[in-house]
Image (cartoon, rainbow, N blue to C red; front, side):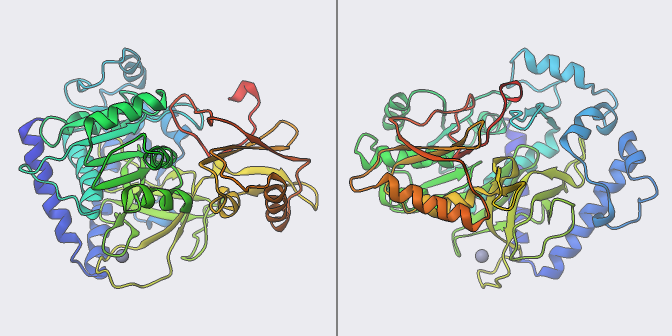
Length: 453
Ligand SMILES: [Zn+2]
């Protein structure tokens, strides 16, 4: 890694550590000042924001319009603050698959996989990229892994290895300077992943939450023999069952992180209290309902609006993420000034829209299934909605004594409590749960007509 980036990273990380000793008032003041500077920058250099926020320049954040991914991509050339950037050229650059080099020798290009429609592109210059790295580094420090130059831990990542995915780019940037790292695609055969991890013996393991569960099962079955000091689960809902199996496999639960390609870490688990705290000095996250009204602590919202305080190339102000999260009401004494993220229910697109007992349809959150399935003696599961609204439940590694009928009965009752009646619920015992192209094994799969899949 470029030594100047490394030094800037260590400097930024030291500043972030100072913020952890702040009072709430100091944090609020810093946040307000950072937001003011972001807006000033955007209004001076982004033709899109000049129009989008016209007449609202001095209004509070909560009164500004919401930016969706579709709007951002449609107005990309006007939204960015470098007039030389053109979406068409960036697309062409990305399609050549030469990640690792900076676009125009200046920008790191990240892309979202496009699971909810068209892919999104996110550009970061060096100053912004240092914040992205610092954000990941802070997540790790919060789990007890100190970042410094003299102790370099062996890291393994089992995730998407699309070169445009943020996890790959961060790994590539830190590889030489920070720590030796092995990146494995989540989509490759499991036996190969197990073999490579056994040979590498990672001290730090990072994986999708579903993959963390699969690897914990492999360890418990004594095919995987690794002894990581710390395990991180990211990008998917971390269930109680996965936490428990990882504890059995490696002696501790995985550390949870709430990450988005748009902005890096939004919240991470803190070793002192084992709760997730928001990175409020880097990102403002507003929890809102489906009509963008604020949702109070203690209740799940429908979307999260993020404002990335360090964004300059592509300012993100009230950018919509389809995540359903809950902020904690609890005051606790770990000492951090940052609010506690109580739970992530998953992307709203993971919700199933099922026939209601009273007619019409009801959105059923993944949590409804998690509550039942977390205590069922199986390795993995997946619920798939069929075209006729029937549900097929795939199970792997079923332990003795599980009665399909009892499970169907329990799920049917849970759904009835949500006001739902499905035409049928079928259990299938299988050897593996199919993965998506990016290597995830979602717990819940909504029905999508082939044309939209
Ligand atoms: Zn805490």
